[in-house]
Length: 258
Image (tube, rainbow, N blue to C red; front, side, top):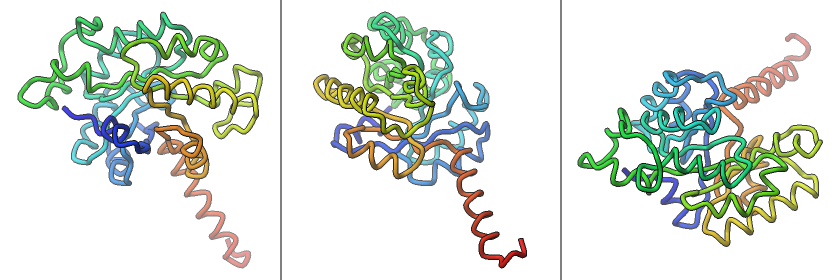
C-alpha cells in the first residue's frame, strides 16, 4: 500500500483534505472526484457510522484520494476497526497528554511498535502481494488533534511521541477552551501565537501540521502560515454554502418575483 498524503508531504507540498459528514456513498463518490488529495470520514461530529464509512471508502476507491477517518474518541477498538476498514490515516480528537498520544499510537500500530490486533478485513485488500501487515505501520498516519489548553501546555511532550506523523488543529474547540467563541478561522493574537509555536515545533521534528478551515480563504491563509494539510469545511457545509448563495443570487436577480 502507498499513502499519497505521505508522498505529497515528502515532495514539500500541502495536502488538501475533504471531509464527509453525510453518510452516503454517493456523496463520497462526488467529493472524491473534486480534486482533493485526501478525504476524511468524520465519525465524531458527522452523522456517519462504521457501515457508512465503509460505503464511503468503497465509493472513493476508484479515485486517487487517500481515505482517512476522524474517530469519535481515543479508544483502541474503534481505531483498529477503522484501520481494518481501509483508513490510511486516523485523526484522533482530544489528545491532551503524552500518555494519551502514546496510547493512540499503540492502538494504530501492529507489534512490536503497538498493540493493534491483526485482522485487516478490507485494508488487507489494499496491500500489494498480501503484505499489508509489513507496510501498515509505516504507511498509516497517526494524527492526534491539538484542540485544548491542556494539549497546548503538553504540546512538546505530545509531539515527541514516536509514530506521530502529523497533528491536527481543531480551531473551534481550541478557542472554546480559552474562553473564546467557537469558530474555524481564528484571528486572535493568543491563538495565532499557539499556531506559530506548533508550526515551529512540528518543523523541528519532521511532523506535518493540519487544520480545519471554513473554506478556501481560510485554507490559503493557513497554508501561508505553514500548515501542511488543510480541510475545506465538510460536504454538508459546502452544499449549504453553495445552495444559500444560489438561492440568494436568484432572489436578488429576480426583480422581486422570487
